[in-house]
Image (cartoon, rainbow, N blue to C red; front, side):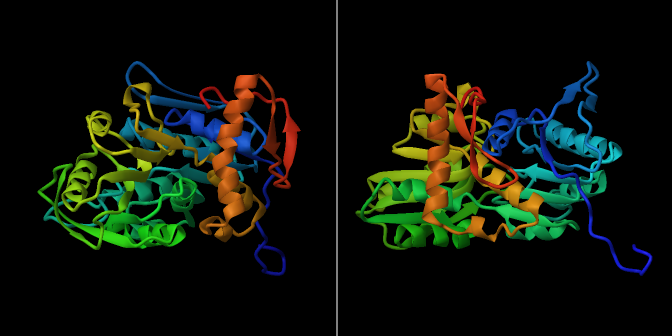
Length: 370
C-alpha cells in the first residue's frame, strides 16, 4: 500500500525465466526456443531414499518465473517435484510464480460419484496453491469445473484449434466428428472448424475400470470418414471400443486425436493392431520410444504455451489463443517442421523475441529430438 492508501501494482523484473522439472524437459526447451532463449538452470533429483532435492542455480529475485511441469508418469513424483520447485522459487524471492501444467493429473477425480471417495483434483489444486504458485497455466482439463478448485488465476488453453487445423489441411471429405458427452462442447468447436457434423457416443463405465462399454452412437456416421476427438488417450480401451462401434455403423476410414497422449500400457499395442488410420496427439505428455506406433503423430504445443507465457508476462490478453485464426495455427503447425529441418541442415533458426513477439535471427541449435 502507498502512503495514500492505494494498492501498488506488482513489480517484476523485466525478464522472465522458464524452468522445468524432470516430467517433460523437452517441451520446456521447445517453449524456451519459441521465446528465443533457453530454460533456466536448476538441479532437480532424488536422493537414494527417494527424497526430492531442488536447487535453483540462477538469481530469480523479483523475476517472473514459469515452471513447466506436466503431472504425468511418474505422476506422484512429478507432482512433488512441482510443489518443491514452487516452494524453492518462493523462498528465493521470485516476483511471481506460474505453474505451467500442460497435463493435469487426477483430473478424473473431480467429484464424489461413489460413496467415501476423495475429490483428488481439488486436493492437487490446493497443494499447488499452498506451495506458493501465483497462477496456473494448463491445457484441456478433463472437466472445466476443475478451474474452480483453484483460489488463484487459471488460464486453460486448448489444443482443439491445432488438432482441427491439422485435419483441415488433410482435406478429408464427408467427415464426421465423434466424441463422448464429456468432451462434446469442445468437439463441437472442432466440428465447426471442419464444417462437419457431430456424432455423440453413449458409453458406460463399469466400476473403476479403465475401459468403457459403448452403448450407442447418436448421429449419422454411415459412409463417412470419422474423426474421434477426446481430451486424453490412456489405455486406448475406450478408443478401440468406439472404433469397433463405428465400424459396425458402416464407417471404414477412422482417425483419432486427443490433447494428451498418456498411452498407458497396452495403449500403443492396441493402436498398432487397430484399423485406425492415424492417431494425433500433442507433446503435453512425453512419448517414450517404446510407445511409438506407426499410426501415432505428435504435434507440439510449445508455440501455444510459449505465446501464452509471453502474453501473461506482458499483461496482455490470452483470448486470441482460443480462436482458430488460420495464420497463427498454421504458424504453430509449421514451426516444429522448420525446427527439424534446420536441425537436420545444421543451421540456425528464427526465434521469437519474448519482449516484442517478433522473429529474430538466432544461431541456437534446435532442441534435441525436435
